[in-house]
Image (tube, rainbow, N blue to C red):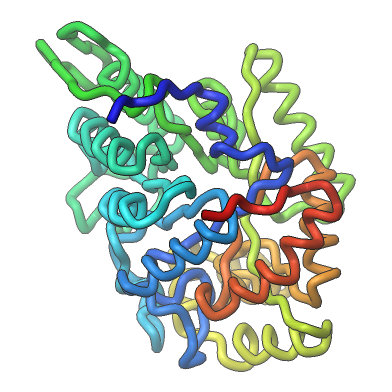
Length: 379
């Protein structure tokens, strides 16, 4: 079968023209992103992931984005303690689906760039051009210690990642044997075949929140995940606009995404009650406290009021934007994010496979009527 040429724009648009793209975030981890004790919490197991990916593919969801996690956070559930490695996970899901883009989330300091480049191309061929890379420059010191790897100081993490990514891109693009000599890498007589599927490289995402991280994404990536922690639509819109202006001054046009936690039910009361049951009454507070301790978030360091707010946020999907309500409310909130200038949102649920069908049946048609999405292709 001949390989059809693809374009970078097709890749970044994930093969749809939808103004608001939707993804599923964190399904490769036990409990997903809900730090909860409830028995219906997400398993993170392989068969559940395949079932979810096929469901999302059929519904027209654009992408699945995993969390790069290597050890759990403890607590009563050992939150995210059982996780599927993301590039292998992506490759298997790409083989099981037809349209959806599946990302690998990769900590650059833990993967040799030439081996990583080959893994990414392999996944890309399995998915016929549907693999994406979410690059992480490094933040979890306990995981890096597990590998005997050095967690560099903040600025140097991005310097290393930029050279790492340049090596990956060179392996994807170079038609000739090449040498690569930089501050952190020295490779001789590199030969890297095959190239990415269809003649265009995979879409690259990053979630840098600092000025250095955003500058890295602007220079090197196609999409940037924005913080959800701003207080109002006006401040959020202004922040997205400012980052877009920075990119344009560098001659770059990026897409902008955020992350959210969705609880959708027939009525507002039902959604709020379920959210309270899972995320407040039955939160795995021991795991939350473990996470906060790793980040040195205490009443002494942040003040009692801020500490309580952050503790509640981390129980809610590790800080994602909570969207809790009936289908009209959820669709309206997603429309507001689109209005703020975002290209899409990656969402999580307490149990993805149980809750996604209702979301697709009720929220997606509302987004179609708002002109933000088209009805999915069938067959």
